[in-house]
Length: 260
Image (cartoon, rainbow, N blue to C red):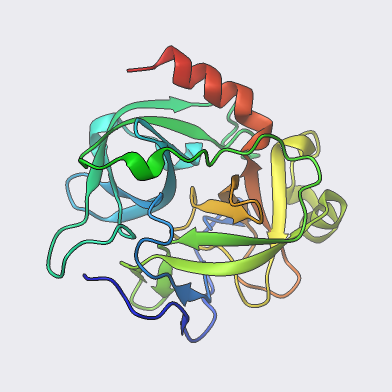
């Protein structure tokens, strides 16, 4: 696929996901196709054998990527990252990254989704990595508010269950944790407020296939990792994201420990 000339191609309709686990959908979008090269860090986490899209992820350096912990339940050799938003010549294959090590947060709770974050040690099969020099990790989440963008490759059509081969994006607004608890009730872990972010959009949301996808906010930083929600694009119902800033020390310590 070559570079596209236009950014705002609207996907018609709202996707509702009926794949429910303990009251939560596994997580997208009534959104827009993203022009190639706009957000090449947003990758598709795929099954290495079948190339089936499983989750989203974000490349944070030439050697590391982040995704949701619940997305990586198998061994490293079962996964590959594909850079579907990287501009390639017409007919050429997208670059990939193999997963060499999966480091899931040791306090990850598959029931409450607390600490739903995993660091992937990768080998990026790409000669030019200079575009990854810019720091995408936030310094802190203090004062985080306003508009953010969720990126993903999730379901476009629930009936066919086809995921998007092109990166999609939608605008969301950060909402307070009080509002999040009010709307989602018992599905928000009560003792985990500082480790999560909630965001909501008008007919836009993360959904099936978008777990692990990046939430990029006004400062151009990776603020959240798509974790779960109660439904897809239901008015007023926020989605829940793992706070990257709340896990900065954990990320940096493990990047240092597993440094190449």
